[in-house]
Amino acid sequence: MRPHLFCFGMGYTARVLANRLAAEGWRIEGTSRNPEAVADSGCPIHRFERRRPLPVEILSGVTHILVSVPPQPDGDPVLDCHGGEIAATPGLAWVGYLSTTSVYGDRSGAWVDETAELRPTGERGRRRVSAEADWLDLHRERGVPTHIFRLAGIYGPGRSALDTVRAGTAKRVDKPGQVFSRAHVEDIASVLHASMTRPRPGAVYNVCDDEPASPAAVIEEAARLLGRPMPPLVPFEAAALSPMARSFYDDNKRVSNERIKRELGLTLRYPNYRAGLAAILAAGD
Image (cartoon, rainbow, N blue to C red; front, side, top):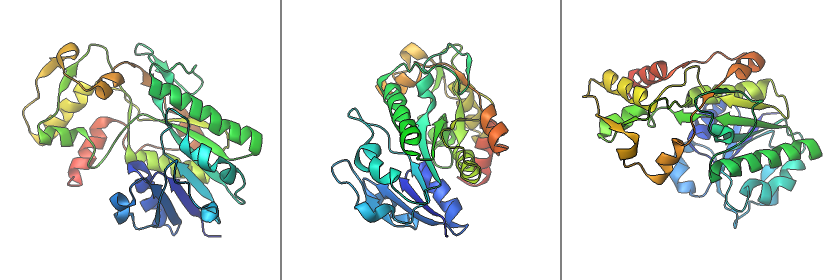
């Protein structure tokens, strides 16, 4: 049977995976709150919102499901609207839920792996912890082949420090000791594809590169690659960050990716931000 991927949320990461699988002959469908915005995806896109559930027959023939719709204050919209239908889908081989490393909270720069206690700092992280638990319950109670992927900061073509440096909006925020883990979108797609090939229902994976680094170091590398003046170093307290951007600095941790290498046999194409930024620039983005 021709494999059929259905993406709840045809966003940045899902489109990269979908394009890769479509080239291998997969059938691809997805959802968006604004289908016109992803009309260039080359596959059928259905409008989905909590108040607009999909037709019950939409998952007929689907073999793989990717969920990138974030949880809301009142719960996970995909589970709430279609959890029962997902559990009843015959021939379903793999379900991937895209979570985030915010579930670990602040570790003062220490390393965490998938066995670490979940103690999120903010409300968004707490929603993710709850959503992960609900998706794993669907696996334990109804046999849904759920896999959880905790993504670090996503970057790639059109969404990297190169873009902010070019736009003149880049800031080198100085918060001593602060580090983030990150992941190139192509490596995320590789992890998801590898998991589809070697499924382990109930598994949880961190998805990040090998080298956590300070945000300022990434901006410095982007400016160097572009030959642009180095943005000034701004103390964190004076950086005038948006509430959303400031919230990311609440957590300081290093995320281990050993499990994706060990279980999925994966070699990252972009093991650090330097390799990732250089590749984006070389590709002409």
